[in-house]
Image (tube, rainbow, N blue to C red; front, side):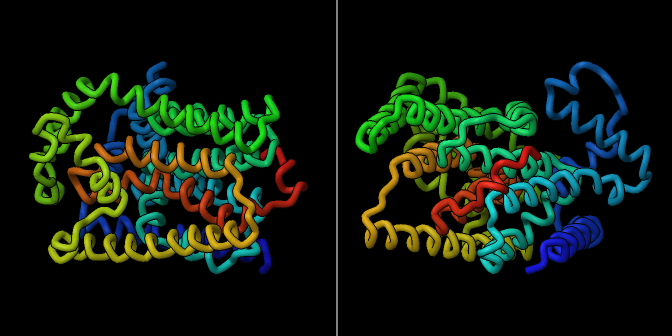
Length: 362
């Protein structure tokens, strides 16, 4: 594979989906908050440094003033997300898996939501940087580059709930290296972190349950198209219903539409089929690694624990935002889709990378 041709082609694929999003997809369903960002007031103030929405409104208004047309004003965000993808694939040297990489990077919803001016484009960028940071820590390189701090800041600003678990995984890996823990003690430390998380959920169960029961108000849309897709919140309205529904909720919040919803709208059908494909693809990569671990007896607790913390933690905090609406589930999923997919690609190839690539600063 020729490096420049790959990325040039992928850039034009994203550009195509950017125009497709505004020209076709926007006529089938809402493009989320993209329109409000592009047509919001151009107000410069300190709030753009600590409010993700204020930052998006300012940048959306600024790019609209410069480029005049909505689709062109989204190009800077498309480039930002493109760099996040490039950074992750290049630094982790994933070129040896061209078919898997292309399958993962060319999912329609991922291309649409990370190409328009959206928070998901920013999420794609910081996910690409942070997944490399996590893999570096797994391999024992615990240094931080300047771009890592940029990504951590953006993650804190846009998705602090994700950072809670990414940070735990990084801290776990740092402690395991610093203390030179054996596999048994590494596993023990990881189990302790997981049980601490479960303990905190138990301690704050009343507050979490109350907050969950009040979340339905955030899914009352003025857009009738989105309002029709909103699900019944009754499972959350019983005592501790949020926790009882969590296993199914975490699944459906990642998957998106139910079978019945897939039959109701073309966009839900596309999203559902994409999710089915993703589940099979993810299952293949996980099964491939499990078989290799079994054959070679090469279980690595650092990988197992850090993956458990990141995957289950993010799926749990994504659950309340994706459970009540399939459209929101798919759109918000794109914030961590690259993170999950690249981690699983690395698992499939047992964290393949070259030292020269990993030593690059940007």
